[in-house]
Image 1: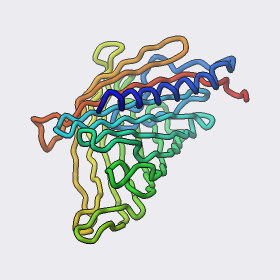
Image 2: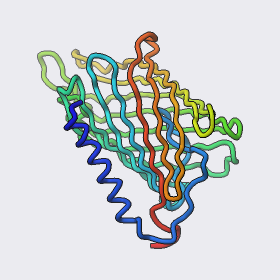
Image 3: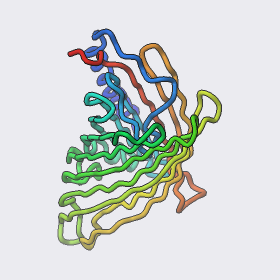
Image 4: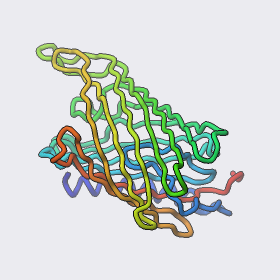
Length: 287
């Protein structure tokens, strides 16, 4: 990833964050921010905690491969309560630099809705998500699927103790007439299903630092050169650390992890960087 491309990504993210502050920063009074406990999105695993009333979250992730491709993928996600803990809307926009910079650009954007299942007590949280993936990325440059897709994911969170939380995910993505390249026949379209499942455990290492241990299996669907739909299994172990910086106006959560491909245990797959900014955007119940 060139320095120019990196600055374009950073500038875009900062501009969007500042835009939100200018739009909502003058509304008063503001609701209190969450307590010091970190209830976040982990890294590769979704936690089943929706945004509280009047609180918006900006999630920035950056993954960097450690193989010869030197690929980098940045993702910006904004999460909004609609208007309380039960319902949440969000969107995600990726930008990538793949294969030593041979392909650069925006990937497929996603629109997401999450519903927090009520009356499950204080230890169990279940928040199914439905998403629509928009074909904003170029399929020819491997930046997108070349078609719309729907995605469903089931995050479940369990408080094992006051300080230890476990999370589980089960999901699928269904691409409608995904574009593929077939030998001597040009482009072809197929409906392609992919699947994912995994889990994580988060526990304190030393306050305020938390240890994160995630496991993810991805069964990614694609179209091979013969025009058949195939799935390749990917098994990732992702140990990392995160911590919270709490100010009067914002909770900032940086994190980092090392992605390990269990098919190649001696070769780290890549590095994963995480930065969450969570702040109040308007008073509850006011227009």
